[in-house]
Length: 588
Image (tube, rainbow, N blue to C red; front, side, top):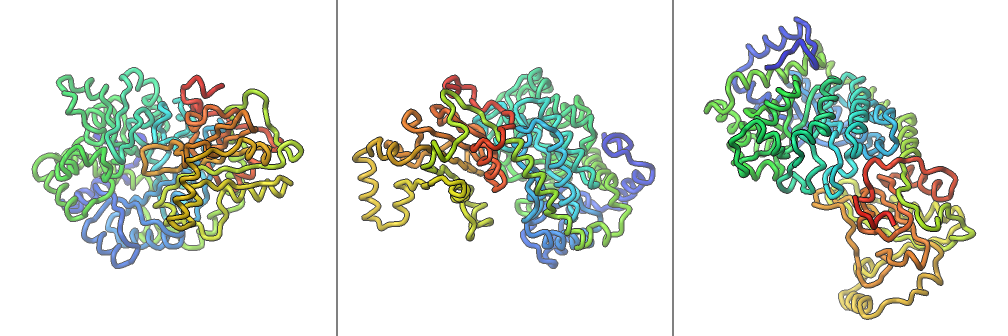
């Protein structure tokens, strides 16, 4: 059972009294509602007031929008909620995870490459300042997963690295920075992602480490963060078979549940063995790693019964509210478990001092938005780009630095798979592509730069008949080697693979018949391969002699890359993962 006087709450008698008196005053419907984190379908005031009245949820992950839209939405929510709300953002990389236009400091993998915890602290600090400015008091971060399997598609850039000590150091620094804005963190995804190569959004996922292996890696990180005072933990839909079997000797293989439904993992391991006294929240409840394991009518209350305190997102609000209520009435959720969860939820709100504030004073005023996107914050992001870019491989006769004298004619080749859903929201407008931006920058230095257009790109612009002729010609004969060697002095491949929602972040070649898309010509022309997202593309281009990880394609990152290619700046990043993917031939 929770101890509100102890870490991470440290409540005084006044705070504990507010929690207990509030519980006594709550109806059963209010208690059930308090277990849910809502993600609404509208930012309209009438809608927000109605869902608050109807479902009485305890927390919210608000709808995305501009800073001013989110601020207004959060003000409506707090002013009309009977009990103050926890309001969450996904500030994994900076304020950009809280609203459109927030400052992106850098992905965790990029911070890990600096090997300097001050940048993790700055990421947390900037996230906290910008989140607090729009009325957010909770972040679903830091990501404390450890990258043990390069094939894992979920956390390739969301992890600080493959070393538990590095992950712990960076995660503690992020938390310290974020909490300076009187806001709290939810580290994720317990019991730990990065071992399986499957994605719990789409399938089952398992952390297959033995108890001893887990204790020395993920257990070290979670224990360290708990000792440091983390307030909440997000549980992934990830199985942990070793500890399931430790706490349940009679368990059969087919009965191993995801952690979100596991009493062994949540109550026995997390709250018992690790001594976590804080708030436990499920990951999003629409993921197949959860929904495919049990009827939803059983799964909703089973997550609370197992040891979760908050349930992330309604599917259908009427259905899920009824499922939770039925679970209580049928004894799946006991009075003891329900009240323990409510104490943890209210205790977290009391820690934040929400109970002491007038409803109209919880969310700051519009004038506070002026802190967002300051030059100071932008300069921190630029500095991280300079410190993080990593020269992973540079073997044989180095072609670095490049120069107009020896590499005047450059062929730029783009490898890109983008997230189509995000593309719909962000759009490209008149903004240059990352390849066009690099071309412009190199041309300003005196290089002659050509952007390669593949046959696949060409056929999108012509009639079906012409497309057929292009494709037939592409496969009927290869081009002479001299088409490359006589026209170019250097090839730079730029890869941006952000296949969010997919099962892989691997390169996918547009053609396979000797076209320049695939860097087969490394002995014909100097070739540099630059990854702008995934750090693990060497598995697919082991033949390249010079390979660079940039971790993102922001303009200040590309600026720093060009300075390093030209030899005006050193490569300072230290690989936070095994970018060679454990393969021998990637090092040659």
